[in-house]
Image (cartoon, rainbow, N blue to C red; front, side):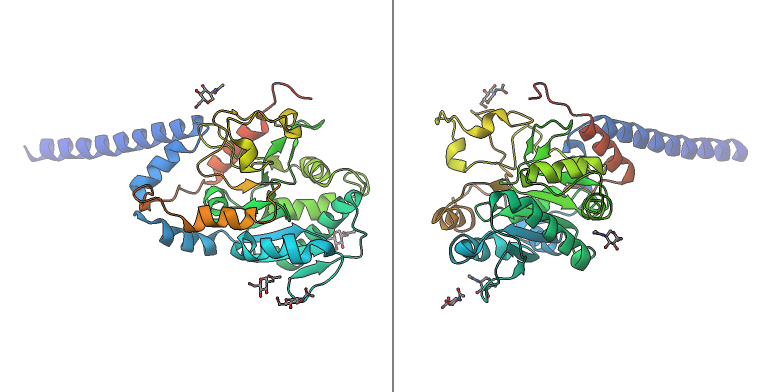
Length: 339
Ligand SMILES: *[C@@H]1O[C@H](CO)[C@@H](O)[C@H](O)[C@H]1NC(C)=O
Ligand SMILES: *[C@@H]1O[C@H](CO)[C@@H](O)[C@H](O)[C@H]1NC(C)=O
Ligand SMILES: *[C@@H]1O[C@H](CO)[C@@H](O)[C@H](O)[C@H]1NC(C)=O
Ligand SMILES: *[C@@H]1O[C@H](CO)[C@@H](O)[C@H](O)[C@H]1NC(C)=O
């Protein structure tokens, strides 16, 4: 009698173990096939304790460290740069302006490069080299923006959180170009992983053959340099395909405005004009004057009673295989109408 019971118990335990493993494997394969974050977000919701968004955002501020490089020039120090400095720039883990003159009121990397449009690429290269030399290991992500860009830093951190900064990737609003993966709009701002910054500096900016200094548009050139050194252009749209990085102002994106924006023909993924923007949008461009304070008021001050979720969980971080799978998925993205 006893041996039969023991045998049955052993088989039962083995059966349970096998069942659990099979469920794991099936779950893993499923996650693998899905291209959006929803499955992993759901898993995280079950796995991690839920906390208030305020607590999570404070934690993310230390967990996802971002160095911000902002292009400006002396005539804009006291206007545009000062506005960035007192609004979203103050939420960067470190903020550095790129300009040809110093200013006692701003943290500036001074460069002896004449302030012309054709020199923007030279300025960004100098900024990237400086960030690589002095801050590579102090930050996880390296953002480049203009002084008329507005970034919702909290949403940027939440977006970046699942991704490993040691993978070779950069994010932004993807535009089409002669290169297969295109490039990221400079005005919407783009963010490089630590490894992307490392590759850019060690293999691209250092090279005498690829990635030469020239007067092409800064964003296009950096995008092409990054593709040359194997950095993947990531997809920043949400699971409904709505854009998070926006190269125009929120006003111009409203569905009732039939705007012939120059950006229309540039998008790698055309936004749906009736439903353009993600609820977790990250950036806007061509933000001017008092619009900085305007956005601050609506985003950080005004609260609509009853509208906001009080609690949530973070998405889970992607493991090595998941991250590689995601990079491969992105690198296979091609545009339907390359121009
Ligand atoms: C920029 O921000 C720093 C830190 O908050 C502050 O000390 C400085 O006065 C600001 N500069 C300007 C021009 O607003
Ligand atoms: C720095 O800020 C102070 C106080 O806002 C202002 O009086 C001064 O002119 C500023 N300096 C420069 C060089 O802009
Ligand atoms: C190229 O990279 C090496 C290795 O990090 C560095 O020592 C050198 O200064 C770089 N050269 C240029 C021109 O950036
Ligand atoms: C664009 O968004 C509208 C409103 O949500 C929706 O009805 C429509 O189907 C969308 N169009 C496309 C092509 O996705």
